[in-house]
Image (cartoon, rainbow, N blue to C red; front, side):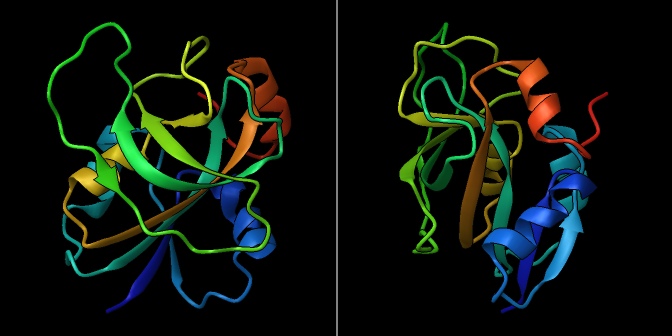
Length: 159
């Protein structure tokens, strides 16, 4: 089984050196969002060991907090319907501040009643492709502020 570290943008590569320095793996820059995930990962074997690291927003975790993701869900706060919840293994890193759910959406989250969680735009789409081993580490870049995200994630493209 090959291990592959996924980052959405080149500016997140520094997170690998900072938080995953002892993990030997290839790195793939996927691009932001669902379409880029599907395009980048559709031909990978499902037994590829995936580690996703990147920035995420949170309504209440402090900026700079390190979150190991325990579950991946889609973010759709206005409707409820049955869908799978994906459990993830953790990396058990000493730098972790929290273990929490990650809600993925198709747009940047600027407000939410959800607490004690993080928001991104890729993880649910990664696990939804059916990989057998997915782990994820998110660094809180903002408290649901696009402006703060741009400041914290300097070097990360925002289009």
